[in-house]
Image (cartoon, rainbow, N blue to C red; front, side, top):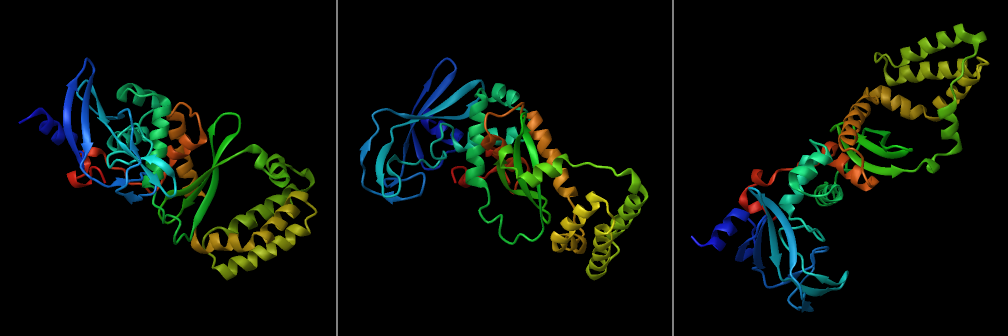
Length: 327
């Protein structure tokens, strides 16, 4: 068996031919050519047989290591005129658009990122921290289910700190599936005046301690789980009326809030849900952030959160059948 044929089977990259293999001190350089004739835009999938030109230098990608050797793929690629993205380099079936890593290497790094810290990944895979973050972002962009928001019925919303100095992510959790379906970075200046005031408000009125304790117990009974929606609505309305007459400023304000959010509270009682699942996932997210030893961007942190707690099933390269290796 020829060396080129052996490496074609070892690399398991569909849609390419291996034309040359060169062994250096620490790197195996594999020259490949694409079998297809038509050019494809890697961003939108536009296909054409018209070639704009050929790049004067070879494109390179890092592939899965072969023992102690790093594997580098090299190919001379053409450029095409895409009606949407202009003149671009043709896409390849074994790597995501704009990546210097193959799809298999991206998936390996992303899988490791959900299970070990970035320092260990950098040492094991011989890549930089930033490369790990970019790989996670690419995998999430391509693998995250676009229909994950369809049919949402019961959700939880919470914020998690991904870095010191008030760097936060807002996460939306699907209670039925127990996964994070959406996330966004939050800036402290986005908080409203009312939200900031609520965070700072903890007051105790010594003259109304007993009344406050009694109303607290009545309020807790509403959420005991043994009431129907109509019964809970009746008790909640009575509690709000008493709180309004209590002359205790915190309870008066709480009553206004309860009335304003009455339907949402009754929904939670009717469906028997709480922030428990959200807090559980937040603990998982905190562990991920702590294990990552810091991130350079919110996008990288959010990508890792979606990889570990989102609706993504990430298979390692050897777990996929050969026909799906370059899918």
